[in-house]
Length: 157
Image (cartoon, rainbow, N blue to C red; front, side):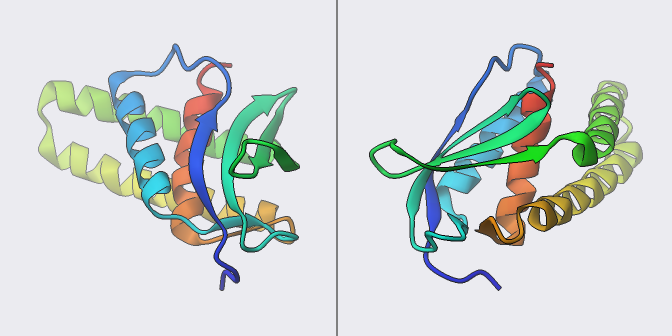
């Protein structure tokens, strides 16, 4: 259970996202819009913080640069990308298959791939919550959407 009223009021993705497909860009835009509308996210030491999150990948680490409403740094949390890499690779393969299935008009395949995407999102969200435990309080839907953004950021590498 997530304590406090902390939430992100804005999400800034640091780095170029030039390699995103139309589907990835749509996923990224939807995740940002959903997060800005509703989320539960706060540094453990600041459970009621209304924050701006600058999310990036630097030197093989996923960086959550959490700032206050005036965009002043409060805390940065870095996570090794290693535990996420296989999930991100699998997610990219599913997106590629999804694009192919759409081009071919194969509805049954599209539905099966969508189920796989949901499963990967759930697994990624669980890993995100596990890795942020004790550092950031976050609910499952927020972790799920952040996983989408991590996948989008990883594509630039």
